[in-house]
Amino acid sequence: MTEGRGRPRSTTAHRAILDATRDLLIENGYARLSIDRVAARAEVGKQTVYRRWPSKAPLVAEAVLDGAHAPAPADTGDIHRDLRAWLHGLVAFMADARNAALIRALTAAAAEDPHDAEALYERLTGPQRDELVRRLWAGVEAGQVRVDADLDAVADALTGALVYQTLAGDDSLSVRRADGLFDVIMRGLRADRPTTAADLSSASKGFVVNSE
Image (cartoon, rainbow, N blue to C red):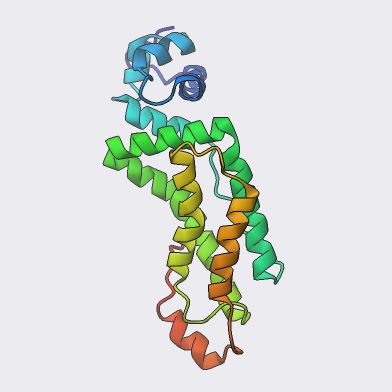
């Protein structure tokens, strides 16, 4: 399949390349991925791939991020229940072998190209982290979370531990293990007195989350 100079990009070819990239990443990992193999699997010419992506790192970044979304924790008014349910969902997602392979590939691509690291944060990591911090802040406002808690550190701990296990290829990733981490963190977050308006006013000065 070839495309003449100046012709609009083929949506079909574009989709076939992204699908082929994801399939090959799941089968063989990032290190064994090549433009040649992607082109062969997608049944397009190598130049068709190179016209869109100059190397495999940006190709992998787009293939993995394509359609990705960052689910936000629910807000039922119970911070413990909401965050536990959210964490269980994250564990289930990362425990899936296909998703784990794509996460590892995306991390490798981001390490190879700073622009892809930016794309990863802006489209996936950043939005997910911001939604988690917002839910934690709602817990502060509800008097369920300590007003002086470092919410950024909590968000990093909850997600970082699971990502680390996934990158390390740890097959022990489980709800039980995640619950152990969650319980330790939430014990440290629990408010030991009612939160006042003055507490919230003081704490909110340091509460900044990207609005985009």
